[in-house]
Length: 300
Image 1 (cartoon, rainbow, N blue to C red):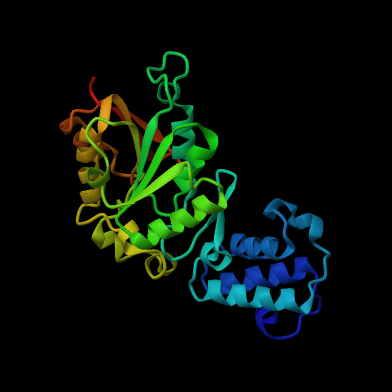
Image 2: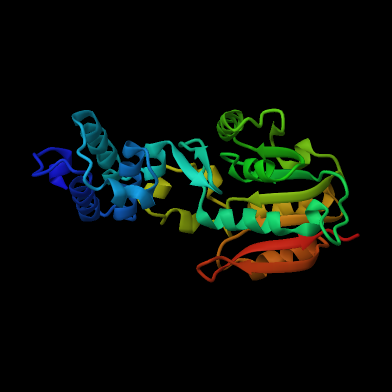
């Protein structure tokens, strides 16, 4: 890839620059180098990654070639490609991302899909909710969860975060999606902004990485994404445990709690839920086969 960042290339065709970029990133130990190179190239060519093969013979103008060089250098230096691009595709919507909040992961898309499937929450067959549900997204970050729900289903929505920086990013995303009148954002914890017994659902992707494990995270995560969105304390469950307790108070009888958790935390989180009185606890695996999500009901 040295050619793609400085020395002349035998060709300026997209396929050749893509190959050189991928090689360069691989040599420097970048995370998923081929995917990163494809994401950069697809942004430059204004197409989807899967459409790159249709543009393989496109000759890049000098300004595009220089933009590719800059992006590749940043990724090679350890910056997540999503931050270089400034956006990520989440549930089919482009979400603005930067260092103010965690980069949305595919596992979180699986959580959102599960929430949308829950007929009882949305008043489907056998559902107890007849009006629009009231839903709080705790630790909203970029707003990807609550905004995706609001785009898909009618409801009353609020996103909460202890980080003012994250909230500002979530509000920018809400404005870009036309949801400023649909989703409210509050600075603080669940107990600070929501009254007892008022919510139909609490949804959350909270920091759940133990502090010792956080220190060993790859550089592209540890040195770029906000620690407050990742570090869950000594056992990884300090924030999760607090939110479970708050949710038990904020939810209506029979209300829903959806959580994303670490791959080895299901047993411990189930115990936390049971201790707070939750029932009908269900654990779901992610596409990699890890116990990654939980759904529980507050007692009626």
